[in-house]
Amino acid sequence: MTVVCLPGDGVGPEVMREARRALEALVPDIELRAMAFGAQAIRETGNPLPDETLAACRAAEAVLKAPIGDPEFDAADVRPEQGMLRLRAELDVYANLRPARSDSVDMLVVRELVGGIYFGASGTRDDGTVFDTCEYHPSQVERIARRAFELARGRDQTLTSVDKANVLETSRMWRRVVNEVGAGYDDVEVEHMLVDNAAMQLASAPGRFDVLVTENMFGDILSDLAAAVTGGLGLAPSASLSDGGPGIFEPVHGSAPDIAGRGIANPAAMLRSTALLLEHGLGRSEEARALETAVEKALTDAPTPDLGGQATTAEFGDAVLRALS
Image (cartoon, rainbow, N blue to C red; front, side, top):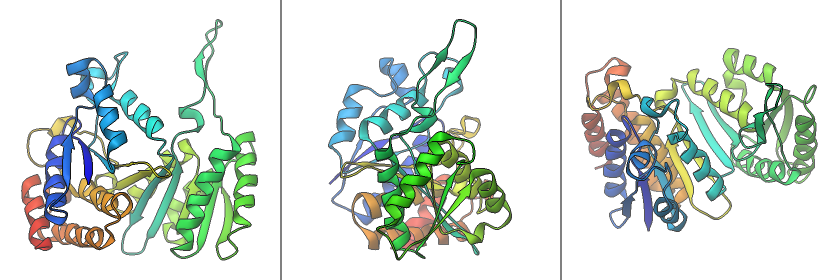
């Protein structure tokens, strides 16, 4: 059982270290294979996603990715983020799961991840006009809708599909396909909501949502908002899943270069992403629940400075391991 670990940039290697310790404690026979990716890979090879790394990811059961990004490459022609987009496309991890939980909220944002405006045609015309095109094929909408219905069926059996059907042609097609898929899920209650209203409802009454499904850019924005109203991006995990191939599991937060090397980064989101890997990538639901519970205990017993505590990254990891023992 092999998991490829992409240590990332900034605080990435620090939080990855704690994730590896937890995985090794929970699955002693696992093989963890570290590969170059992001800014580190650009420095070494000129490519944020070297061929060797991509091949290893394809052959693994799952990919555990730490945050990437480095100010050195912010305005460069070759950037770490290009490797991330290519990896998602190569592995066809079209379903991005973003759970958001607090005392009164338990929602799951299901974001289509490999289509839409981020992957459509873009460029500059001779007159100086710049364009980015949002494109979707019905088959792309069908598979993300089906995944969302299946997830909703296993939860509270309610699904909110978010679009902008009053303006966008892609959204009108999106709504039509969601309805077609929904005809096979009579046990799931479906509502359609315009994205601006969904943002307002998420900010003012997040507890009304269970599962939301939406396209790439809307999902990017709404999932960050959902994280903000349930504790912040520093605690938010994600899973990006394909149909049958390896998934990518990563925290939502950035590489935080301003605190890199200081040993104070909060590894909670990385560890929660590891729990998603255990559940969705390795089929180890019991171990996933154990890790989630251990992280919750560590947040109380050993909070890091961002949460008002004094614990280092390693001390938070130690608290997780104690809770697992």
